Image (cartoon, rainbow, N blue to C red; front, side, top):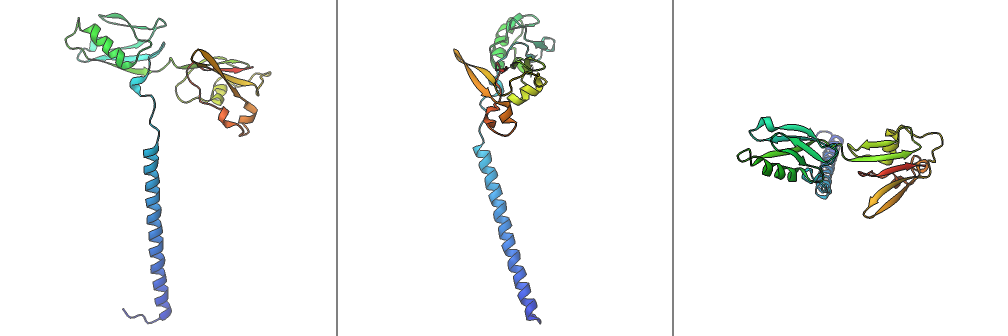
Length: 211
């Protein structure tokens, strides 16, 4: 194609080259984003506890299903004595074992009454995992852990501080084997963005103490 205006030709070539550079840059950026996402997926930490590893506790609500035996399927709550009650087999200890272990226990007990039993246990609602908060808060007591809960979350759930709370002297008591670990929490510092590592995620049986 013959270009009548030389300046137009230069402009056309410049635009084409710019488009090529932009296209290469965009493609490179896309590849880098894809690579980073892949690295993030590959490098993402695997969960340490699976559903099959969950240890059943008091107050947990369980869904028990027995294959082809709808009359034996029940929604039950683990009692304070750690047991549940089902038709035919009566009381069964559920506390302290996993769902998979309870399934095996139920299958064994049901063999007397059902041919080839196949029980399925699922935790419908976890109520056994709790933390405690005591001292100078509006609503001290035990709270169910339904998701990640930090010390700040715990204070909020307990309605905040009372008038004489020592907000710089808060600590978390955590069972560490045969002893207890004491983890300091300075509320004044944390809300100002200092020592935010003190705002730890609470574990079941942790106790937040507000002097």
